[in-house]
Image 1: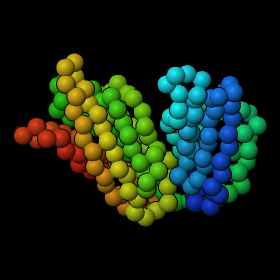
Image 2: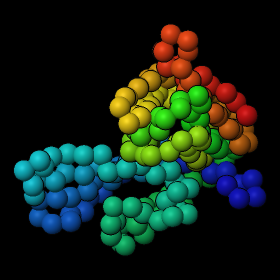
Image 3: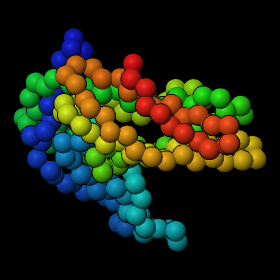
Image 4: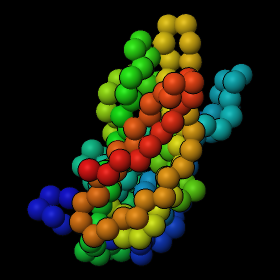
Length: 193
């Protein structure tokens, strides 16, 4: 979103692609207006089955390239479709998570959905601020639901919830702050910057 140019991807048609790593291990890609969602299936091992392969915003796809060994011809098709159906837009959102006051605890799991679709399912090892989402988004109300897992050497804590964010034209910075109250209950509050 350089030079205040935002893209509106709301007209991107839903599309699916599939590629194989080996005969019984493949990746499915679903593209819709929220971004690129990767789902894997692996029957090559005893613990085989489906798994979440990752999520990318369109900005991440253009900036960093595809993930999960996407074949070049599929990457080109995805780029062409996105460029054909995007139009100049008005808004982007930067969603951050901040852990405060947890001595000895580290954020280790992040599970976030945007309007019902997974956008961030990741194991991390971070303290302080964690970038969760950065991308173009339609102005209006959007629901971010989340589960954050924090671990210490001998304990684990989990907080879950959802927030309704009213996205305005321009760059929106949303900070989710997780803290522990006096009775040991974890709370996540929304702070706008």
